[in-house]
Length: 66
Image 1 (cartoon, helix red, strand yellow):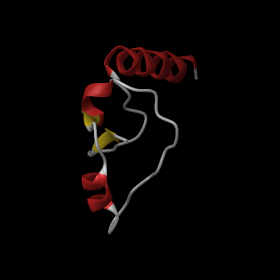
Image 2 (cartoon, rainbow, N blue to C red; image 1 turned 90 degrees about the vertical axis):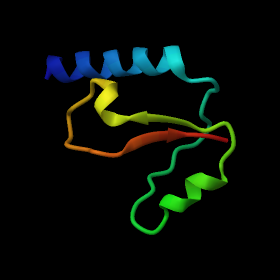
Image 3 (tube, rainbow, N blue to C red; image 1 turned 30 degrees about the vertical axis):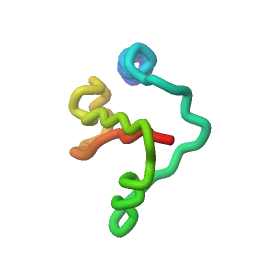
Image 4 (cartoon, rainbow, N blue to C red; image 1 turned 135 degrees about the vertical axis):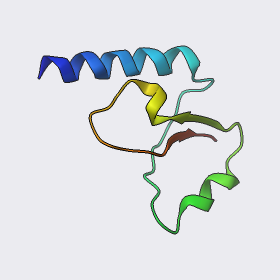
């Protein structure tokens, strides 16, 4: 279990250094809703593979925007 906490802490530190703004809400977009990201401004995209957080086998991206 400690290994998961370490990975989460590393991921949070990685994002904290790179995120331009502080997110106020979160949405999980799936099939059919992915185009909603095109409506956001100040977009930032982080491939999950770059986050060093491989707790789940997710192949998409973490998307941030306003």
